[in-house]
Amino acid sequence: MFTINKCLVSNCSEDALSSFDEFGNIKTERGYCIDHTPDPGRSQTEIYNYIKNHEKIIGLNACGIIFKDIDFSNKKFFGCNFSHCTFQNIKWEHSLVRISIFDFAFFNDCNFIQSNTIFTSFACCTFSSTIFNSSDMKQCNLNGTKAYQCSFDNSDFFSSRFIKATLVNTSFRNCNLKKTIFNKSDRQNVSFKMSNTREAIFDTPDNIIGSGEIDSLQFGNAIVDGD
Image (cartoon, rainbow, N blue to C red; front, side, top):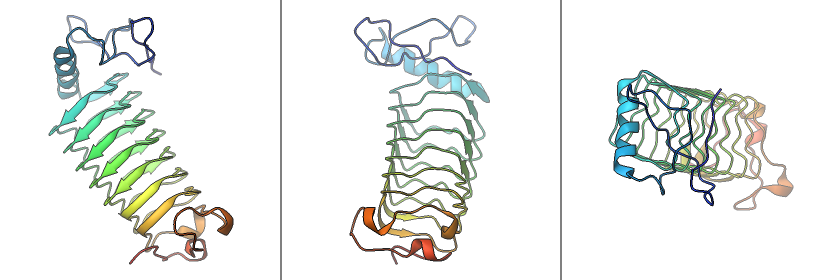
């Protein structure tokens, strides 16, 4: 569905940023990564403008870009690469994301309320004070993520994965957790109240990370790790 080009610098293995033709369309040929692009400011501005001026964004490579105080509400992203990006105070309300990559990205004070995200990778991301309430996050990769003071309440995580995730002061209240995997996750003061934890996959007592105590999440539908 999309192509991730490598940087033109021969000894660089980083992903190249999207570049644009005279009509503002994404070019298919290789370019430079954020560290080697001749004009980083111009590259960032062009990516900002492309997102601003399009409702449907397909195949955009924005690896390593910093986004701050921008509204992505009602945007539709298909096959985009936002790995290693920083998102500060970004609104994603009612956004749609399909088959995109956010690996190693950092999210602070962002709003994903009523967003719809499927087949997307957030591996090793950090979420701080970020809200995903009333969203669909189906079949997504959240392995190795770190979530601090976040809310995923009233969301659908069908067949998503939080393997080796760190979840602190975070809420999954009234969520669909069918086939959601939390193996080897470190959970501190995490609420799963009113969620279907019996249909999720948690650790066996022998391989729980964290306090070392046996939790009872897999034995009830309204169990809470924390208060």
